[in-house]
Amino acid sequence: AAYLRKVEAGSVRRDAGQVALATKLDNLHNALTSLPPMSDTQLNPDLFSEDKLTRTISAAKSRLFLTLLAPPTPPGMYIYGSVGVGKSFLMDLFFDTLRDDTHKTKRRRVHFHEFMLHVHERIFELKKVYPRKDVVPLVAIELLRDARVLC
Image 1: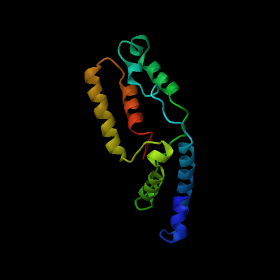
Image 2: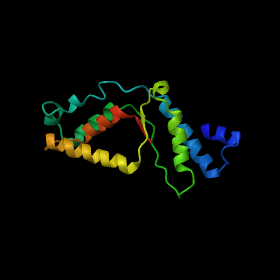
Image 3: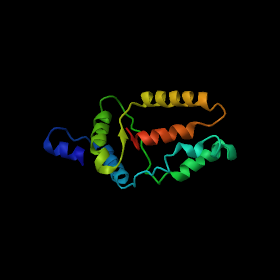
Image 4: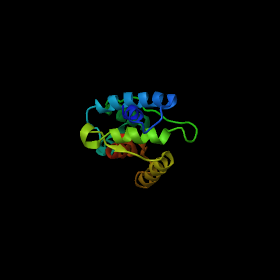
């Protein structure tokens, strides 16, 4: 919708590839804004403390547990293409339409490589504290607390 408004206003030239992606982003926007907010229970790292869950179940089961706690979410998308075709432009438009307060959707705009560096840093830090524990679910909870949508 935001893209088509820009086309109609004459600030952007219509591009078939951009229209296709904008349509998919609009569908994702609609799905995201209809999700209920995450509950505190779903984002409680104590569920994975050494003396509770991780003693009794394996790391694989803890990942399954995190998955079961999460509400159904729409599938994400990975946008790729040649330089200069409008990927960042459309992502910025999409990001701007997801207001934290309006849609109860925390959001974060970050480059993929920066995001992965952050994830690996957190895994490394938590492994110092819990050397025998699968800390990936803890990192996932931290990420969900920070943002429900990563762009």
